[in-house]
Amino acid sequence: MIDFTEEQLQRYSRHILLSDIGIEGQEKILAGRVLVIGTGGLGSPVALYLAAAGVGKIGIVDSDSVELSNLQRQVIHYTKDIGRPKVESAAEKMLAINPELSARTYHEWIDAGNIRGIIRDGYDFVIDCTDNFTTKFLINDACIIERVAFSHGGVLQFSGQATTVIPCESACYRCVFSEAPPPDAVPTCAQAGVLGAVAGMLGTIQAVESLKFLAGAGSLLSDTLLTFDALTMNFRKVPLKRRKGCPVCGEHPSILELTKSIAPQCRT
Image (cartoon, rainbow, N blue to C red; front, side, top):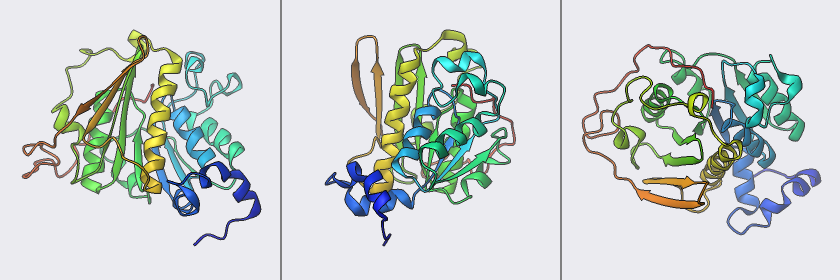
């Protein structure tokens, strides 16, 4: 049991007041270890809220550097950060909010050769904050193989979607989308645009899912795809079902190892 300091009791008092969190839930959050892949439009609010919530160890992965066009939605980065590695910029803001946390940075490309090793660096939960299908399938497969729960999220223009995957229990990304679409079949945010605040909405949902997972509170978006259209503010929950023939989490999986290919950079 953690012996909370007076400062910690003040910092996390609004969590402790919640009957579904309380002292025990906040202890679990403080002991939690979350990996955030991508520190762009989704990863920015995720990283900020996890740091503020007191997650003990937060890993952030991104090979990119801050660009002027990022600042419309990637709120963890400032104008002065243009040209800096995103992981350095993000870690600086996270530690400014909460100097007690451990911020582990991975300034590198995510690929089949390194993702499992990064996940094995002691993480309880992974958050997919990327914007390309190659990386999303890679994260899904790695998390299923490593038996680590994760949050999937995606945004485009005014829409967003999210689901939470619990390995061996709930439907995974491949259960819903069996394979990646052909290159350029679906535009990215860089091609089609995205309202900055929409990325903030989705990233905040992903942060909530990870904190509920750590604290053991409420119901997760497992076996559920949450979608929303910010233009109309319509939210919808689509039931998902685990597929027996899924090549990674089905009864007879064929994906037992990862193909060594480099995924595109994370630019959400």
